[in-house]
Length: 234
Image 1 (cartoon, helix red, strand yellow):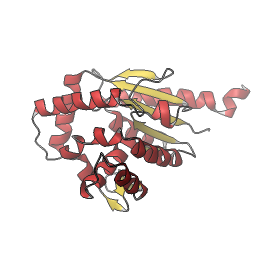
Image 2 (cartoon, helix red, strand yellow):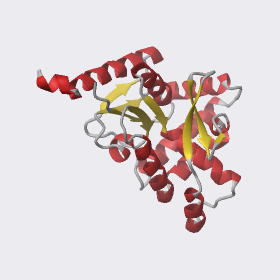
Image 3 (cartoon, one colour):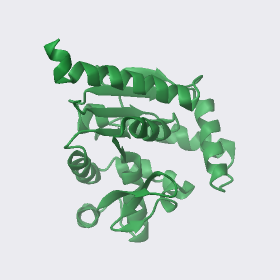
Image 4 (cartoon, helix red, strand yellow):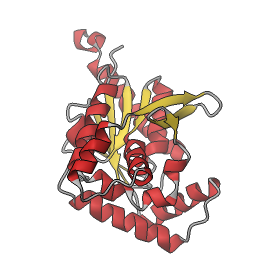
């Protein structure tokens, strides 16, 4: 059966990563968390004191960054590695969330990460989530999803996610962070967040995670069947 590329774009805290991860698992596909890639770059910039206004520093830094994903057998999911080191826990910290949108809008950063993302997805059989997957990274993806949800619901989900990781963050601070990221993501010059013309909108405001997963898996199976050689011969 033919493998396809599934591109899932949308706003922060809509359930993109959790849904994409489980959709990949259900289909036996590779999950690529592009948001984690930009978080890893943000961590590298902070650890190495890279100035966001110094183009030479940025160019030198991105040339030394390699992000990969390694299966964590204990968790049954992929951890993010930055230059061979597991940074999965650190990149989920709030201080990274507060800076990642500023880093990810830099053209040199996006060019470097998009090149890595395209290499990772070259053989297809991938589920990739982010902001510009269906519009820039894989505009030819066979299935494009655009996820959105009510702002308060998104903030509640993010706060719950942080609490599960032992991080206590004020609800208003989370709301402010999401609003800031939405503004930056949708108005940035390089690869702004927007819905691809052929994307299917999935509003997760009133959907349980399991319902989100089922909806996208069913869409994917329909598209895989449509793309398979057996289907074209019938």
